[in-house]
Image 1 (cartoon, protein in one colour):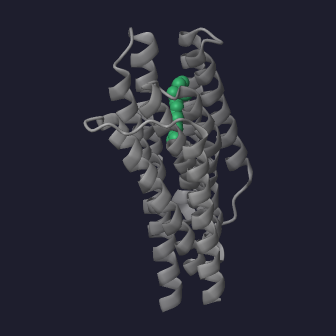
Image 2 (cartoon, protein in one colour):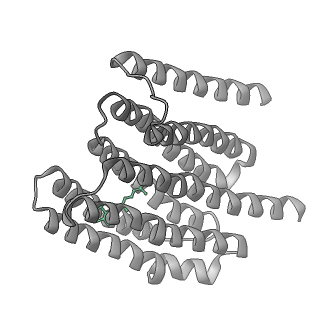
Length: 261
Ligand SMILES: *C/C=C(C)/C=C/C=C(C)/C=C/C1=C(C)CCCC1(C)C
């Protein structure tokens, strides 16, 4: 058991190294220049995401049982994001451009996984319908696809923004007043309720940073791309790593409560 554990994490770390090396070799990646604070923030979030992945995977193996899936999904989110950040950092450092396309590819993969977490933490403690997951997924697609089309110039920027806002509002409705919120309020133990509340407010306040960035960049006459990237990078620390830690908190409390009983 212990050996399998070491083998698994060893395999994972090799994977990460291979990925990183491949990416580094694939472009004539420039050097991170001293004083490039946006570049530093890309570097820091890349490493924080990689380290978080190892943490969530290890904790998933340690706790196991009904919390294993939630923690594994947290690890998938940080893993996928880490890869995108390695690449986005190279784009920034070599060209000074904003890697918008890669951000959207990352979001398209990680945001649905973050949404599944609402379903998974409730499914760990109660019987819940799959409808929660499907509604959150639809909200995600309505939010991201028009957002991308607006930013990339395939659609009028204002219309893309407006439709995206509707998708986000729908997600907020579901987690504040829909079925998920009712299950959480009626059936969840205190630790899960606390974590649900933190996740819900992350989706409200933490996520607001992205549409604000869109608004400033495309609708309010443009903004400094360096600042915008730095803000997005910091936002992802909250929205991907801290979000995973809120789930870890519920898992850890619930696991401890059952062990001590
Ligand atoms: C880890 C990445 C996350 C949590 C990304 C979240 C992205 C959003 C909440 C984007 C929201 C947008 C709108 C609400 C309106 C349209 C423009 C978007 C796509 C930036």
